Image (tube, rainbow, N blue to C red; front, side):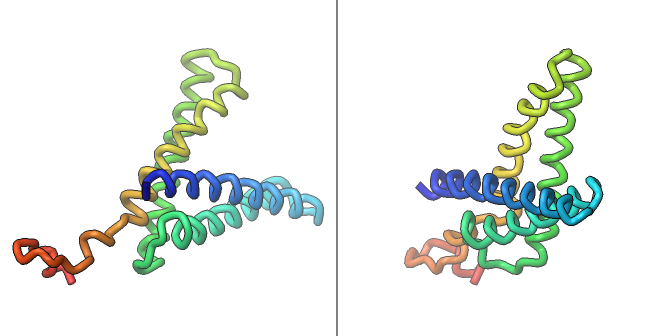
Length: 143
C-alpha cells in the first residue's frame, strides 16, 4: 500500500510543480524577463517545490535534507539525460515527429525520477531503524 500511495503523491507533486514552474515562467515573462531567465527561474522554483513536497509529503523523509538535496539533483540530472536521449533518438534515428518524441520522453523521466527518489534520495529506512522484538534480529545494532 505504501508504494501505491507514494506513486499517487509523486504524480500529484509532479503535476503541481510543473504548473508552478510554468506559472513562474509566465510571470517572469510578464514582468519583462527574457525567455532564458524566466525559464531558469521557473525551473528552479519547480524543482525547489518538488524537493520540498516529495521529501515531506510523498516519501516522508526524516533524514538530513542537505545530503538528500545532492542526491535529488543527481537523480533528476540522470532522468533528464535519459529523457533527452529518448527524445533525440526518436527524432534522429526513428524519424518520429518532435512533438510526439517529447511525449515519449516523459514516462522515461517520470519513471527514473520515481525510482531514484524512492530508493536512493528518500529511501524508506523505517523498517531497518525500528527496534525489533525478535532476539535473533540483529537490526538493533543499527540504532
